[in-house]
Amino acid sequence: MIINNLSKSFSEEILHDVKFRLDSNKVYSLLGRNGVGKTTLLKIISNLMEYDSGSIDSNGKSVFFVPETPQFLDYLSGYENLRFLCEIKNIPIVNLENYLKDSNIKSFVDELVINYSHGMKHQLSLASAFLISPDILLLDEPLTSLDPINIEIFKRMLREFADKDKTVLISTHIIPIAHQLSDEILLLSNKQIRQLKNNYTETELTEYVTNNI
Ligand SMILES: Nc1ncnc2c1ncn2[C@@H]1O[C@H](COP(=O)(O)OP(=O)(O)OP(=O)(O)O)[C@@H](O)[C@H]1O
Image 1: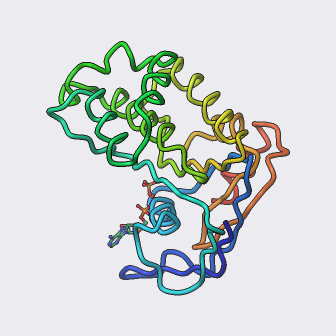
Image 2 (image 1 turned 90 degrees about the horizontal axis):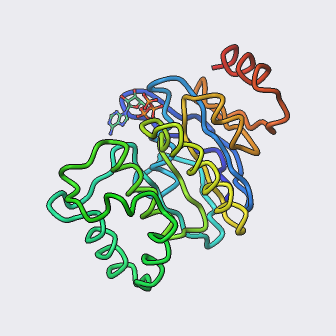
């Protein structure tokens, strides 16, 4: 996917001539201060929000966005929500059964979603993303509400997902997660993206990011 000269304003300009590219087999982390426009950018590139000028060339690739606050049918179980997703997206139920076999969510997937914690909803949301299996997976703050064991599990799953000729882009405020997980860093500040190869140590990356956001 190539993003070229993308601009977006609300009452004031948020993104100005933003340019970057996303390649297959890579994990990207999007870093930036609160309110800088990360969610706006993710929504634009997943076609959920209009932009003012510029272009997005997705090269025929499918894109799926996991929002920071996942929405489900609260009075169905997690399993029923996932089964419903499989039906509307034509995903074979066997894929769901296979996912559940190896997943932590099987311990609570039969409970009603209304009773889920924030972290449990996020796990269900990540399960939806893996089932849909888009070419480009965009995740808005996906790991923040997860416990340390689940963070490690999902870091590994996101890496394995990207290694299947796919792309993962996550927005996060946690620099160590960005450092451990990503091939490249997209730093959003002053309405523009700076694209960096993740050749830094964690300390160097923290210093660079805090000096440049
Ligand atoms: N639909 C909208 N209408 C008007 N202003 C909006 C809209 N969506 C976002 N904004 C504004 O655009 C700016 C960027 O918001 P956005 O949610 O993209 O930031 P963010 O980087 O994701 O923030 P955070 O890290 O706090 O989640 C903010 O000033 C926000 O108030």
